[in-house]
Image (spheres, one colour):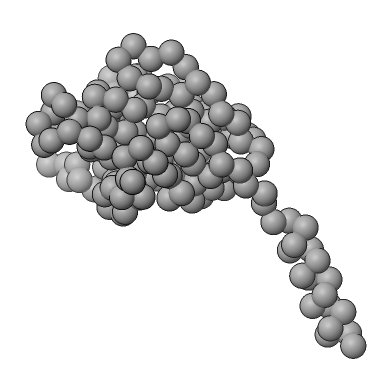
Length: 192
């Protein structure tokens, strides 16, 4: 009897804490996110831009167009001399002690820069596309997101439509939810 009651109470607790989700339609694509995340749109110059504001006020931005960037291409090693340290933002300086980084007198010399790269990535299928899933090597330091090199067009850069969707300096819970949401992306006009 006690065991059945304990199991019933646990099931009730877990069912009450399950997250509710909703699908946001951005026209060019849809994504399923936690119920309390909100859509926002912005005015782009040469692409469609917008994003999502999370419950913790993190901003997750997308760029849908010919010039959308691959975050992993700006994977600079976390090796800093005094000039490099001076260029870090206040947020980066606050987070730096919790990361794997190297502070040196001079950037020249025998340094294994690959040891201190900021990002890691893997490829996965999202809807009908091969996508690059990018995460920071140091939790919370840098960007998390997705990059798709070509939704339409050929291998030539001048006619590709690319897609990037990133959030920066995300706490672990938000990062996990964002990566889960990215796997729900549906590009209805491109995958039918």
